[in-house]
Figure 1 (tube, rainbow, N blue to C red):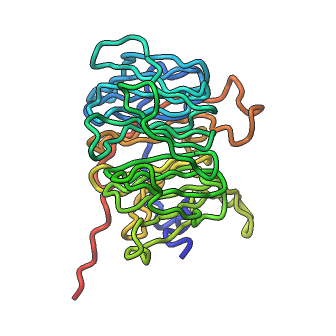
Figure 2 (tube, rainbow, N blue to C red):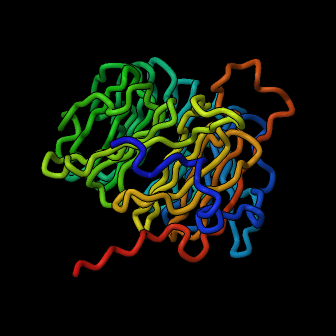
Figure 3 (cartoon, rainbow, N blue to C red):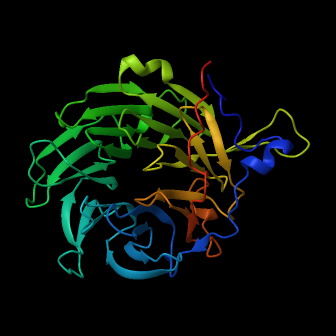
Length: 363
């Protein structure tokens, strides 16, 4: 069922006016990081954005109604920061990085320095704050290249649980009781947080190439997977919904005057809209797109932004879409020159850009 949306970059000229989005009014975040941006994350409670970077820092910005931004806080790691997230109450920011540590800044307490709250034997690739049933306080989940996922009660120095994975952890996401773990060798582990130390299901990615990102649906009934080979898969957790699983091509370009050759780009980021349940993909081709998974339809495609897109995020109301224009390391270290763009752009979500297609009325 591949290609149901059609190619993200081959819309016909007649449809271009309705399917091509506008980025001309997108606003640049002030004082961005000095090196590649690995992750961005909006607060679930306010208009604050956390930005993790290879310059070993996590920065927190406040964004006003006009799209203006101001740096409010930052904290440092001892190596590149690969992931960042917020606590559900919006008072704490966590970073995880190549220094094999997760560090937390307690904004609610007015802290100016971060505390180390987790450790692994290898770099921490992913951090997420979750609610575990029966646990009185929020729990930090860390996924590492040491092939483990650990759960941390922030009041204790040692993990409350550790789960071994088949391979290095590349991506983690959580929504409600669903936790999804994507690893090397295309393994995907699904966890029901009622039983956080067990894998509810394990499967191989429906995509044939390396997993780049996994992201949970807004209603936690499933998740999307993006691969390095310009494909995205929509996957439901329960077998009863498996007929709705499908994959599609995206982030591919056909050079002029060629028919059988496509340049294929990595899908680096997938973000679900918090209100409409539609989603975005963004990739190494420097474009992003909005999709309706239920209608199997692309809502909008946007022009190239002047560099690869490494991370994306919707704010809590879904009216701001942030995307990081930054080198994604897909071509090795030699391509990351001092001239490489590092910036975060804020796109105001207008009108029906992210609204699902109206369902057809049966007669």
